[in-house]
Image (cartoon, rainbow, N blue to C red; front, side):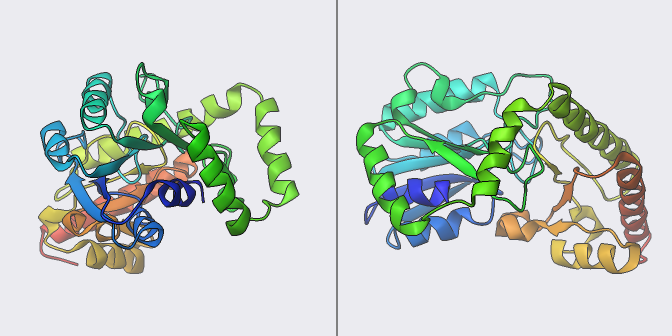
Length: 295
């Protein structure tokens, strides 16, 4: 809802929106719902480590670009924006005088060892950054979707307020109380959660290092990893279907996140370590069988 409101408040016919791929599948539909005549430009992340291709991003942003959408920590890859990328992105935004919609819903799920970078807090970017965040992911409230956005001007705040009152009359009271309760959780809650995610990410890295037809850029944050399964010769939907049917392991086909990513599948790290280790082992077993021509 926060993202939909931000896009509806910003976009006019003919505006351009730049986003990175792979991406959360709802970005494109939400852009088109907000403004059917918006022009959309996708920029692929680098496949080696899922970092921003800054040259491609700079080329995609024009004088007609109204907003750039950034997600960090990233769904589905688990990548996080680094200091150098953030500085370069800031220069692009200032040069082209466009907004940044910074989707930081996974902010607290960070096991990279580096600090989370919130673009709106950087010098000179507060006046052009809309930050999207919430409680659902970090505090295991996934079914109780509750989030928020911060806006850079009173004018945009007023526009969003007018839109919101006709789109969502009220978020259920018990969900609002749950969100408030997160501020009183003990400090170890997020630390323990991140330790669990980090252990599972490390286990998947180790499996990928020894699995035929499976490669992986290590996840740094969020809930997911995005292994490359292209060497096995199957498209992502066929790979995910076979993995589920034959090994009872669920993964999301990469094509869901953009046509260029049919070579990957998304794996959730949010599971108990022993269960995850078993699932990762089955994933490797399936990949190894594909390598020998079995299915």
